[in-house]
Length: 149
Image (cartoon, rainbow, N blue to C red; front, side, top):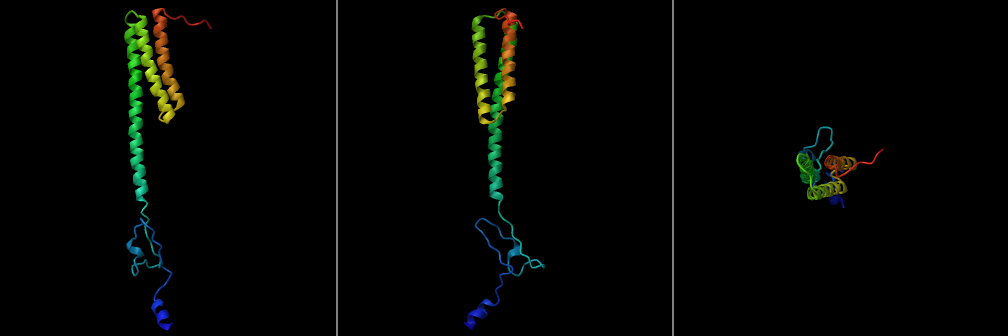
């Protein structure tokens, strides 16, 4: 028993450190290299989580950027089509093609809202812009008469 007591007499719980899987231990936690105050320091390796977070954020940013770019392109095509149709005689078939383009743009806008890429008011404003352009074209061509207020 005395031999056991002498074997454990050199141990102290004062500077003990619990090390978990994935943690880095600094030189300060090695016995004999403690700070003068007697405290022992170690650094937790929480870097893996932050690196994954950065990867996921970058992936989502690129995905969102692609969707926003698609929406902007579709809206520009609709506005250009309306401008080109205003310069010429408008036929019913031209309006059907324009409505198809507006439908595709609206679909991609609504999908972006459902995925959280775009806010609802922004989406409504952009859809309204396309509808106003189409309405102006129809009024100018004499195919639509707005109701009196």
